Image 1: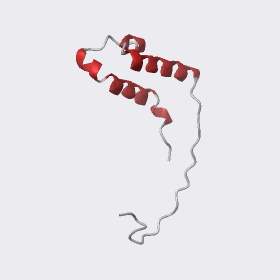
Image 2: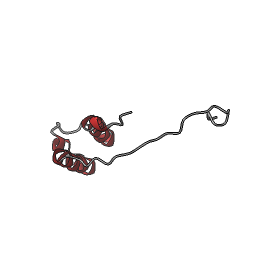
Image 3: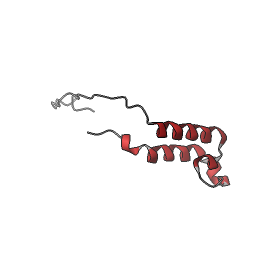
Length: 77
C-alpha cells in the first residue's frame, strides 16, 4: 500500500537529473573495464590474473570496480 492509498498527503517529488560527462581518465577506465568484462583478463585493470572462483564472478568484480571508482557520482539529496 502507498501513502496515497491510505489518504496520507505527501509532497510531490521534484527531481532534476543532470548528465555529467565522464572525465578523460574515467573514459579510459571505462574502456579498460569493458575490455576486462569481455576477455576476463584482470591484468587490464592492474590486478593479478583471476583465480578459478574469481573467473566465475568476473562481472561482479567489474561491477564492484565501477561502483568504487565512480562512487563520487552517487545521487546527492
